Image 1 (tube, rainbow, N blue to C red):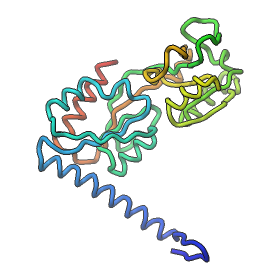
Image 2 (cartoon, rainbow, N blue to C red; image 1 turned 180 degrees about the vertical axis):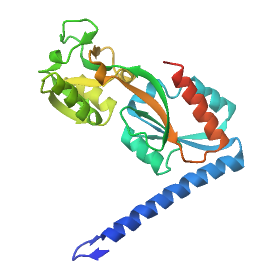
Image 3 (cartoon, one colour; image 1 turned 120 degrees about the vertical axis):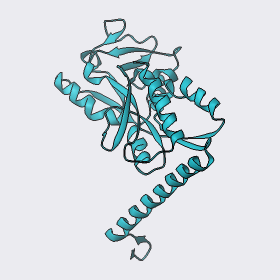
Image 4 (cartoon, rainbow, N blue to C red; image 1 turned 90 degrees about the horizontal axis):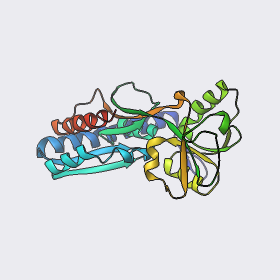
Amino acid sequence: MKRGSRNITLTPAGKLLKARAEQIFSLTTSTTRELELYKKGNAGTLSIGTISSSSTIIPDASIEKFANRYPNIQFDIHEGNSYEVIEMLDKGIIDVGIVRTPFRKSRLAVRDAKVEPIVAVFPRGKVIGKNKDTISLKELEKEPLIIYRRFNALLHSVFETEQIIPNIRCRNDDARTTLNWTKAGLGIGIVPLSALSVYDRKTLQHKAVDTKELNTQMAVIWKSDRQYSALTLEFIEDFANSIESLK
């Protein structure tokens, strides 16, 4: 540590030690959770990381059946964006995560859900685009857009291919934020189709963005190099089979 006149800062060695300590703590936490499941058999805690647009697939029938089959299991839900969910998985905070493409897949086991389009969401009464159900990038050119921060590079790349400079009004990390800002009339929300389960259909409408490069999908992920209890693996298998059946 370096002591200043008013504060203390970590040296590079101190920062490394802090990171290692956090990793050890996370590993201890996940190991304790797994041992609890091993010892108790049909009891314990399952930690799940979810993204804001996953409400269409979790909880689903497979989780309901699992919960009924093992009434003494507790579910510990952690919410964040895809990068945060992967980080929580890496640190051992969660056992399994639900994320959205694109994401890095190294050291992860992955089971994909169905491919879905990105949609443009806007207030009812607003007229935009000539087609009833779809809208082109060109038709979005001059519109103020409200987007996921993690889609920023992808959106700019797709717009650049069409030689269009997008008008980004707001970047954020949550589908609900995008929809709330859209509802307030601050721009056109750009979200995955499944995020629409949380929006107000009385005040908002949507059209699919007619560009396949923007298609996305959710996925169930877990660590490929981690030892899991039989109960955790049963949950993963049931849930992964369930979302794959929706394709």
